[in-house]
Structures are given as C-alpha cells and as structure tokens.
Image (cartoon, rainbow, N blue to C red; front, side):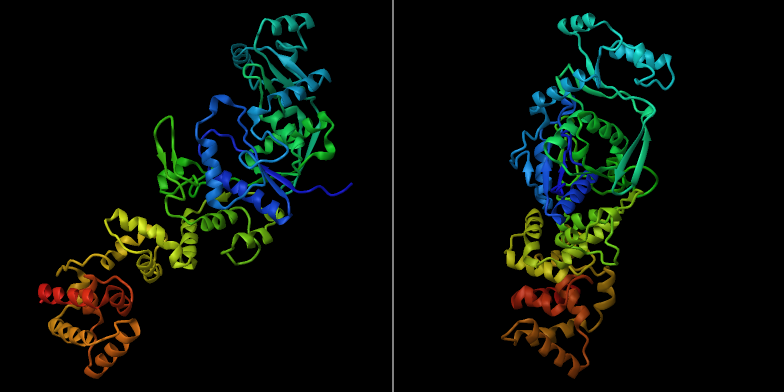
Length: 504
C-alpha cells in the first residue's frame, strides 16, 4: 500500500480565547506537517451550540496569523473537503449515525436527565454500559413500536455507541507507545443528540478525520482517554486501514505547585495565558495577551516549542525553519512540562536583541506617542539601538530608561549618582568641555571622542560622569558620545549650561 500523505488538523471549539496550550498543540502539528511536506487543516468543532462565544473563531484565526502558523485548508482557507465547520455538516453526520443504528452498533436512548441523575444517586459509580443498559429506557429494552411512537411524538433522545465489555483495546501512540485499555471501563458514549440534531465530539471527530484523510492526530494528553473509543469507532465503520496515527502531548503544568496551567496562574503571577488580548463579550472582562504584552511572535514560538520537546542539543534559540527541520515527535516528553514564564521573558529579550532596530521602532513609537513625544522612525530606531542592550525583556520597558532622549532632565541634588559625581570643580570642568564642544564642526561620535579623549588625557580630566549628570540627570543612559550625537550640539550645550546653573 502506498504511503499516505501527511495530513494533520487543528480543530478548536469557538468557546472563548485560545489557551496557550492549544497554541503549542497547533505549533507541533504545524512543525510535523511542514517537516513531512504535508498539509494542515483548520477545522472548527462547534457541535456544542450552548458554549458558542461570538468572536472566538475570528480571535483564533487572528492569533495564528500573528504567530505565523499557516494552514493549507479549512475554515477561511478553502479546500475541497469541506465544509470545515462542524455545524455545517449535520447531514453528513446523520448518515453515519443511521449507519451505526442500522448495523446494531449503536442504539437510541430516551433516559431523561432526571432519570439519569436518579440512577447515579441510587448506584455508586454508575456507568451507562453493557452491565446497565438493560435497566434503562432505550431501543434495546423497549419494543420497536414504542421506540417509533416516542420518536414520532417528538421525545428527545440520544444515540449511544454500543461498547462490548472485556476487550483489550490497543492505542499505538507515537509518544507513549502501546497504550492498552480494557473496554469494560468505557461507557456507551453519546454520539448524537436529537435536541440540536448535532453529533457529539466523538462521532464528528472520527467522521471528519476519515473524510478529510487525516493521517496523524496530534493533540493534548487530556484526550488520551478518548482514544480507545475512537479506535472502536474506526473499527465499527470498517476504517481500520485509514485510522490515523495518534500522538498525545504532555500537559503544560503550573509554574509552581501541581496541576494543569490555568488562567488563574497567569493572573496570580502576572503573565498571559492567551496569545492575544481577549475581551469577554459576556462579562466585559479583559484578559492579557502575549501580543499586547510586548512579546515578539518568534519568541513565543521558540518558547512553546521547547515545552515538552527539545532537539537534543544545548541550542535554545531556534528559528521556525530550524524547528521544522529538527522537530521529532518521538522525542516529546511523556510527563508534563512546567510553564516557566520567566524563561519566556528571556526568549523575548534574546529576540529583541537580534531584531533589526528599524523593525522594533514602530512599537517604540507607539509608546512615545502615549507619552506625548513626537519623533521620526529613524530617531526612534536609533534610541532602541542604543538602549536595547540594557536588561529589558519588552520594548515598553524602554521608556523609563530613555525619557531623557526626548525631554530635558530635572536635576536632583539628592540623587545618589548626582551627589557622588557632581563635585566641587564639576561646574568648571563642564565649562571647559562646553568650550571644546562648541568648537567642533563635526558633532559625530568619532569626532567628539577624538577631541574629548585627547583633552581629558592631556589635562588629567575624567568628565564622563558629571557630563552624564548634565545630559541625563542621573546615572542611566548609553555611551556619552552616542547620546550627545543624538541630542545634537545645540541641545547638548543647552543641557550642560542648565546643569551648571542649577547644580553650581
């Protein structure tokens, strides 16, 4: 048999913002597909109409656009195996529900929520399965005529999959190996609900993966308990030859303590758990996002890729292309990956350092505008270049470090750096330096450096710290020659005169 083309899918539910764990799942699917020259399908699983949230689908698409994770077909991307939104595939699912019913592999159940709750209260650890289905109101226990009458009268019902007990089900998992589950622990899962004429996740997922020719299902560890049922459904339809390979990824764990990463952890420790800022249409609550918090998409991708997988080397900074070339599902961890958000900030700093200053300038310009500063992209880029080497992880952290580039400093005699470095004689020294600088026709970095260094050496001067006080007002800032060249001769001399006048 010819080798199947690699086709993976990411199939979120539009029930709210996309969790960062979901982003990692999509990323691993993307890396795997690109590495094998395959396709990635974007499917929307919206069969649970009660949980639908307006705007969630658009949010998810925009998040992947920002991150640079591309799809080959699916909702908003086109393709010849659609529709790709499950709510638009009702007729397709109904055909397969009827097939299971006609072949005796599923049955109709009329048990009301009240009846099910009563049974759960009366029977400890109740499970609707081969042992208990004979005690319930379903098409296996009711006469055929009564079943037809109930349906004709419009009684709501569900279709349950008939799971036979005592069978060992093998799930061949790329990450976890041979996972064996006994069918006796599985209940007769609901596959279809007449109330909204939609299937549940289990049936829709299997039918879609088969019809869309999905070769590999790469998803979170939380879906591992569903895998045996999905294997049984593939068998029930006779689709064993097209069953996808499974890979269940490790969970993302809390940065501290035990358990799965949640939004509460982000709120508590001050980091985002969503790719983009989310405005809840129901409550009006706003949740932070990586984009709006100042992360670069490449940094987020690199950070997430190494949560639960590594290339087996010490190299941590990997481009998307390097990740595609080196990614290996068999090297994914079986255990959960602790979400080290501080490491995520480190990645962002490294990518800021590597990014061209002109590309960073637009983000810095927005910050300057919010602080009432108007300047050119070129001057903004120049400041970023001088200051990004400081210990910053985000562009928005630049403003408190470099406001003096755009606004004249205030002098404070009680400032520790000023008190230490503006001494008796500093004013006279600055007067001499001003005279020297006034005589320079070229106020560039190299011209200044040559003249000032020579003057300082010949006269035993060390003017750089009091000069910093004059231009900055305290001990922060870049190289003094770079700063003075940026300010220009007129502004540099103006600040020096003010410092002499105010500090004496």
